[in-house]
Amino acid sequence: LDPTELRELVSAWQSGAIPLDDLIYNLQRGEILRPDYSIDDVKGDTTIINDLKISLIKPNRKVDHDAVEEIETDLSNISPKITDGNNRACYIPSTDEIKMPHRTQFRKREAYYSTLFHEITHWTGHSSRCDRNLKGSFASNDYAFEELIAELGASFHMAHYNLLHETRSDHVHYLKSWAKALRDKPDSLRSACKYASQSFFFVREKAEVIASDKAVGDV
Image 1: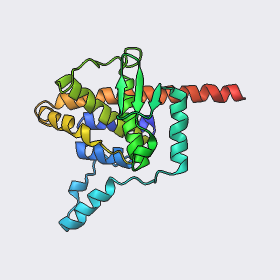
Image 2: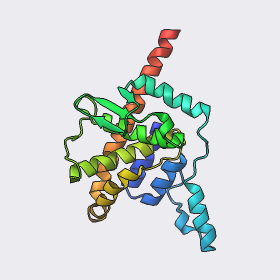
Image 3: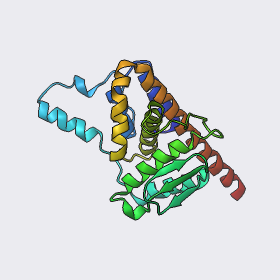
């Protein structure tokens, strides 16, 4: 997905043109399905259809050297302050710093980058960037809402590189705490998606502008 395609996909979901399931499928697959098509419209053996649904969330590309190199180049362009070797992943607004466990502590590279992009989404919430509310106390609604934004943002980034996003187990609690609120207030999900999209495009545009400036400087 390029930024224009992703923006169109999110807009289609927000307008009701495609259901949430299709939005999630497309994000994980990194490609666009026709708005008038849903896997739920497929008729036939239930087992086969369920297997097809599972296959839809698998990425088309493995975590190969090219994908990693692309991610690392983009990260060097946006230049967030990242400290490796910590016990847990977190973003600290007061020092504007992302703390990450060492890469070797993750079983798969997808898990490492999913976690990193979750924290980068928090990083974009700083007052000098997208200026979101990062003052929610632990386990509060504001805290859980920011966690939802960060999970959506991480999904957007992983989809951009055509990689499968993996939600950390310690984030599941906060996402579950929002499930009822999201069902009762659909605007909450729209708001979270809006903030996550804003965060994603902030990072993409910053990375692309700096890459372009470097290319011009090399000429």
